[in-house]
Length: 468
Image (cartoon, rainbow, N blue to C red; front, side):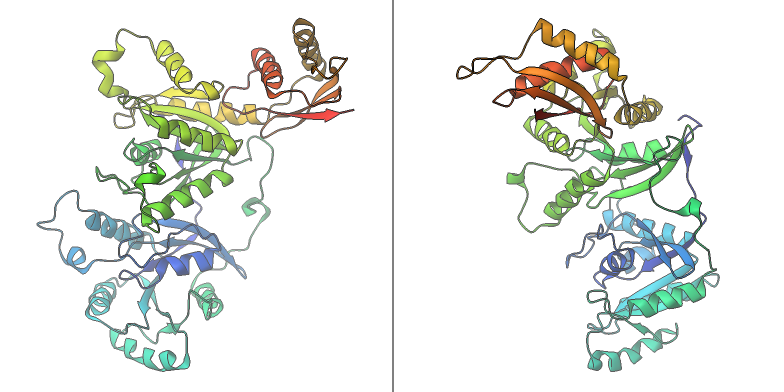
């Protein structure tokens, strides 16, 4: 990989949520971070990968990390466990989080009471002498439960702090205690999360979208050089959006990996997969550019085209990533990469303006170029064109092919002005005199002329109409 790629470190204290399955860690993560991106379900093992959120409370800022439920079998021993065991990978991720932790929030379930799993995890934690540990009793929704949580003192971790992650009861006290246990870090202007439009300071947010098993998590891991996402041949291993920040060519880039999306007919109602798809589509609303990844060794289907249609609705930048080129050695030799790109644009002809990248995520072939394309597309999203040149181009296009008049109208529409009115994405307004609105096909004709004269690769263009 290109050595210009650097994983960003925020130097904030790390606070890790730890505990067995179904004690409410993800609910608590959502409540404290106020992002509601962690999936919440009664199904054990819902959370698989680590989730990160920056929290500011009083004079303290810290990074909150949500981990998957600890499985005692895997915590005790890793012997005689299959390599593709997802539960083992979940535990491995939780252990990674513990290594980073400055403070561990050991979450237990007050409703179900103390059990053998809590005892085993507590024993394991007590052997980590260098770690600060705070015992948190979740699901305390009444006075009776508040009285019963005293049994958790048997764990040897002190008195449990009663909270309810669902209602928010006690979470303010929890944040107060966290702030007391961590160094105070004053927020500065440089740490302000508001976006700055200057290129060097503006963060670029990108999402990786695609069907299951096309290589999204492998792409994320190899792009960043960090095994942040679990990779498995089992479909839907990734259930929730996973994000990581890097720096490339002096630009801050936030990457979000999402759950694979199948056809709706194949997804069970009220399933974890359906919730994962909902979160993936939600992620589209908060990014600047989408890396749409598909399997080049398999012909793109209707689902790929439907996914791109969903992406286009959000008016974000688009890079189509053709993965697994390593599987086409015998079939791609007769074609140049340029021809392959043309075939991809022909397949997704309703998004011909998209940037195209041909890669092997597994072999890391072509990966650094993706970041170059991300920066190029970001620049195009914020591009402002010369107004005089724009008007000349539009005027020439109109002279060559004037807009048609309606059969009920005596005069053709007359375009009086055409100017750019915004960026991200580039927006234009066409002012004209006519009784009727100009058809979409003519706007597409004008857009083609704009693209032929200005480089807007990877970015959508919006043309608004204004009748005078």
